[in-house]
Image 1 (cartoon, rainbow, N blue to C red):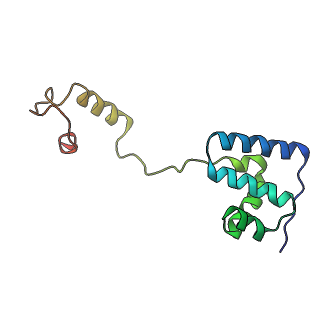
Image 2: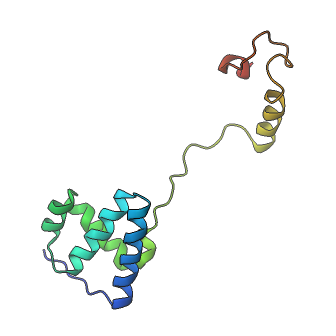
Image 3: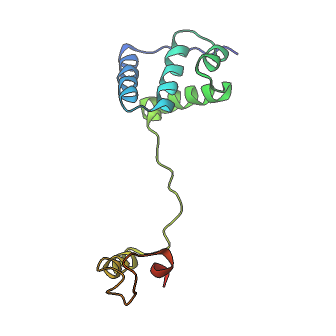
Length: 120
């Protein structure tokens, strides 16, 4: 199936500005994403784009779908939330206050903290 999109001058300019910033930040993933969109807008097929950029065809379609729904906002990657912290902010502050003076102040003979001593 052939996909085609038409970009307004403003949209093309926005993509090109994002592309320049992505190159400056060395964000390869974003560079490929923007190039994929620009290639599709230049009437290249999904198969051609995926081969040119070494991406899966479904990835190219996903990029296109996200751009159609969200526009330039789809070009912002969010950081994954990660695992929740085990310590509360108060506990982390208390731990910092205990660790800052050093292990000797806490009653240890060593001059450097180890993971076992911190756990203790």
